[in-house]
Image (cartoon, rainbow, N blue to C red; front, side):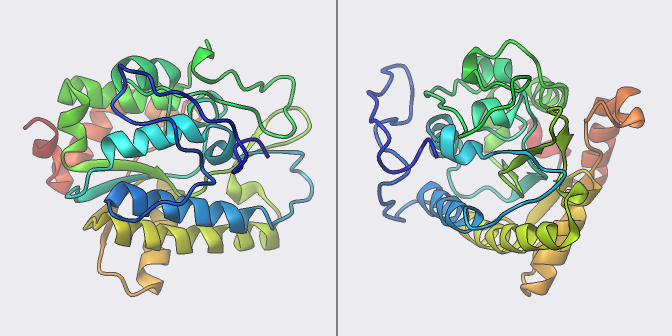
Length: 276
């Protein structure tokens, strides 16, 4: 796959706060929270490569391989330690993380608000309707636009958000059928789904331990349920809550997701952390 250890090195952008010279095949020293978090993700990639999937899956994209540069930039820039709350999504969307390597990574917010840079390659096989164009993608991911747009309104600057919060996806893989239709993990064959999610659950526990967060907020019911199941089974005393997913597939989200999310964060007692 593109993005393995023999990938080309790239010169860092002088306007960017993170180094883009290290490829995913190089060792991480584990001296920082970001390094430990990235190590968990690289280890998960190794296990995911051993899985196989049958109908209805025809295409599998892993942006933690071909979009490793911007993903690593995101983690090294914003995973700073001391953050107490993790927003957890389920898996990449076709015009969000699949393009940028950033969870809920709608291109405009990733490039212009988060200031993330990095070259993006390609998965081994691409559907002609779901081509990877990286940060040059002109199509907008509605879920990502709603998610990051909401927090930009509340926080103003990314540093305010990332003072207490970080964002992650349970599963880094995006699945598609023959038509290019996005397939969520619950739509996979049950045995293949459980094998996948068992690995993702384990990696989530390791990521939570590396981050040291005390609360996980699942974005959508499935992410919330998986987080609660995984962390409880691991005996980890981490509070798990949830907020509505901003997907346009959700009729309630289309009626005013921001108001619902704001009310829920107020109920959870964390809204004030976004405006400090």
